[in-house]
Length: 144
Image (cartoon, rainbow, N blue to C red; front, side):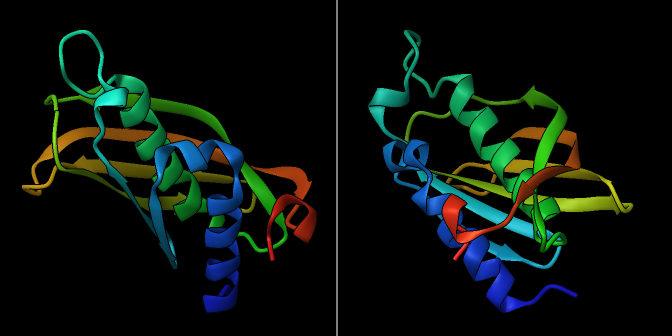
């Protein structure tokens, strides 16, 4: 069963990804669970003055993805399908996405995620299927 060393390597890999430098986020990975925190900034806003849906998607998908990859020590998993439900807008504070594994087989992982605002209200939910890839978890992709 994967352990703390695997979770920390996944966290470092996530934080080293160039796209994540822009979001200035934080990550915590546990067995079958992941937490992503993103501070709300005005450069995330759409014309209506609230966070654009792409930020919601990123937080929800990433949390579910890393919940799945917490169970896989040899390869990177990939998002096969992901559905999101927007419930409330947000324009300040912090986004907190919590992803968890609902079911797992050798190749397919079904995961759910919730996105909370600073008042711990659910502002969006997501669910998806993740699959094992052929991409090995190695230092070359930041898994170190």
